[in-house]
Image (tube, rainbow, N blue to C red; front, side, top):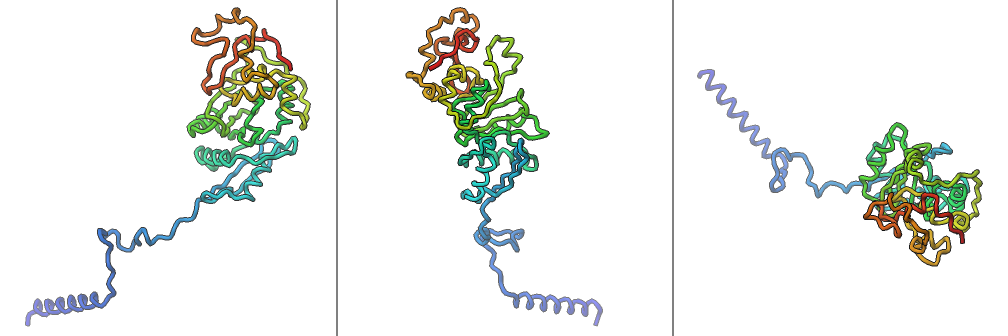
Length: 316
């Protein structure tokens, strides 16, 4: 018998043994439409459900050096204990007062942090600001919206070391949510974000204000009075002056500010009777001087006569 015949018989015997062994293995049915590359991969319906997303908020308070690192939300559920820690962290530490911060604001901070890079540190300049603190700022000549979103737990002022504030502003504006203010001439430079109406504004260069002849209320020594009300502050500082000092687009609800000041009309600008003829050459023809222009945030701009230092202050 030839060698070829022997090897041929041996090969056929080995193939038969392999075939019988394969038949003895337990069968595995392939799902309909499965490809060879699907072997060993469980069906989608067999996968365990994923864990709810955990959202961690990490912040540093600029003035006190305090740090916050909490899981504040799991899935759609805000964690009460973590939210209480956030409320304390973002408190008005000067007056030692706190409020319930808007969860939508916390989400906005978290999402902005993810957008710019979670390894960066967000520093908080201001969170909640009590009415007494804001009213004290206004009386001392600082630029403050009488209806500031800070007083309602709906705003924070923040910056990120190593990241230009205009880049941070662009990232916040891309969220298309609430207000975004840019303060490049403050110390430290920062941006404001809130959950109020969508609007954008930028702090005006003080040198540009002077060149335009826009009057600025003189600053006085800051005296903190945590019990001072905004209504009391607006008896010392006219609501018109307070709103006029804000960057265009920043005011949330000027009518409410006038109401606090005790105006019978919701729009005291309409009751202003001083002639504005001497300032008419400064105003585009499309702007109704008696009402004020409309800024990008949808809030009425005061007539230039009111911010040029020629009108005097209204006091109730």
